[in-house]
Length: 484
Image 1 (cartoon, rainbow, N blue to C red):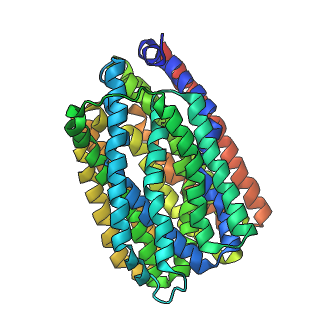
Image 2: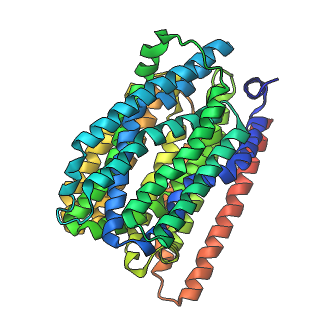
Image 3: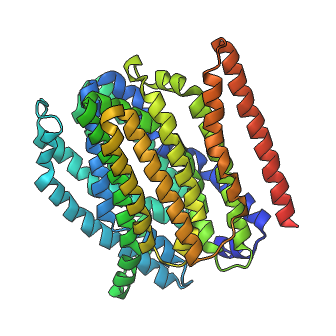
């Protein structure tokens, strides 16, 4: 029995055990890939100027938007259509078609990026680097990243564990090694940071294409182009809006406080992105499982259990970040980045709720009504942008962080509501979402107690340990009850 059929015919308890074991198998590779931004902070912030680092972060955010635009949502479209029919020929065609659509689009986006990208000079007119050279390096990152991510998704969604792990680990190792050699040892600055990204993509991309070739390269039925674009384009719009906020926030901070402040804010966002790394680690396995079982009668209970796991994971992470953000920042970056700790805590709340929404809004995917995601992000983006203009000038990066977080919160709740309307799934464990703001509130109170730091550290570690024990016991109890 293959993995898909095994999941369809298994109990809730067996599915969750499979999920957790799958996460542990993929864990090292996915964690390294997702934490690469965190691991790169010490090398980059200690070896390039704070101005260069600010420019680098803004530029990479813009490249991220361009990359998402070039995918046309085909990573999501492939994943959804792949499980509609069990025919190997149908599934192979969907894989090939998705790759061709997004590779062609990403090349077009790369050319557009090079044509209009000189506007980056407006970020800092006095910037001394050659903008043309910087743009050329950044432009080639777009199709390379798009292709590499698609191949990783194919390996993930088709349960090719060994190949997925190999490609992911290789990229992480090459990127960190390239940063060390080019940025820290050879002192090539911003150019070296961008070149490192290209070097890290080339080898795993080539190896990934070899794995990709194994999926029967042959004739392509283009009749599926319209359905795949109809499903994927809303995801592309969603991704552009999501990544676009990460450009707007950094540019807003640079406008209100300077590029150096944008660099500090970027470090805060990367620390908060620890939650994104954990979320991607969970969804790396959960995504294929959720679509493989959705036709089964007990799928709703499995979804509810997954939501419970995510809420606990996010709450525990918030306890750590809110309790020790200053320490984390000082371990990663120079002391002049310390202000990033407050931004990290604020942004973590929004990202945690986004993670919860990723589970609780699964109905949108199951109903194939991804266009609704555009409405949810329009609501979130409107709130975020409105607040940035209102409180950003007064509070600087803290105001921008608050604005982005409120945008994430609004988008998440709107998405959950629409998901419930189009595909009804009863999430009983949704009530536990209050643990997320409670975690930050508890750590805020402890941090402001008029007692020595040693006492507050003991109190914070105790709270973390107690919550972990409580949540593990709760999960075990719920899982045993649902299995009966």
